[in-house]
Image (cartoon, rainbow, N blue to C red; front, top):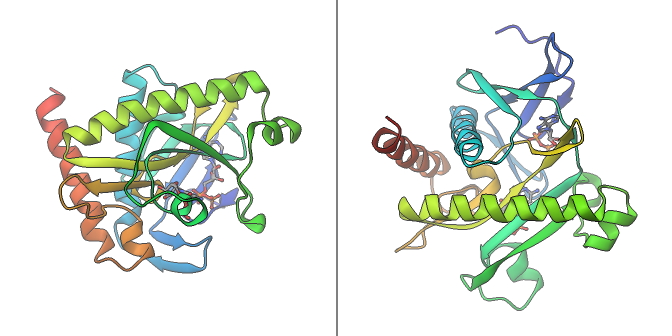
Length: 241
Ligand code: ADP
Ligand code: CDP
């Protein structure tokens, strides 16, 4: 597919204009980064895995009443999306303590967080994505207090849907990061939902099936990602007629 010059090149995706003002193309590259871009690699097929999983979840969420930017796949790693005015927030939901929360606060890795915890980071690579609370988000003018309440409500809904989905697949949905944008005054889920932006553990062995495999050299990351894709495809075969 001929896409021309991207209008934005991120750490894992490139964004292109289309001939429609209100639509964009999001190309999932094979690049993998961790620790704010300090560790970098490329894995053949990784972009297609993350695109397929994201497309599956956007569709699953739409069917469950969550508005997303997803329009359709153009090829195995290229997605047509609604153009959003992105809100520079990384909205993170946690069901189990892992990662930065264990480093920064006296939680034990694996500790259940019930009710789930939502935290917010200001999306700014140069500042290392600092954590921001509700007052700072409003003071920075990122969203209004009502919009923030809506973002959290949608995030809780997505978290519940995906927690239950992965539970059926034998996986623990430990935590994940999502991004929202606005379109015509509405808050809409954008970006991606993939193994790059979540933690997934095997229910029994607690083995990782996400980017932690790459971050901490826990094994072959593509084998881990392929396992998640396979489980989702098998679920689809049984549940989507
Ligand atoms: P990063 O910017 O963190 O390096 P990516 O490589 O994933 O991340 O780049 C994708 C970029 O596209 C992100 O900055 C994301 O906020 C933005 N984006 C995602 N969905 C949309 C959308 N529907 N409209 C406009 N921008 C989007
Ligand atoms: O990944 P790290 O331990 O540094 O940060 P975290 O705050 O523990 O991350 C929580 C969840 O959000 C994990 O699933 C991360 O993969 C995801 N995340 C992300 O996708 N992008 C970020 N910039 C930060 C976190």
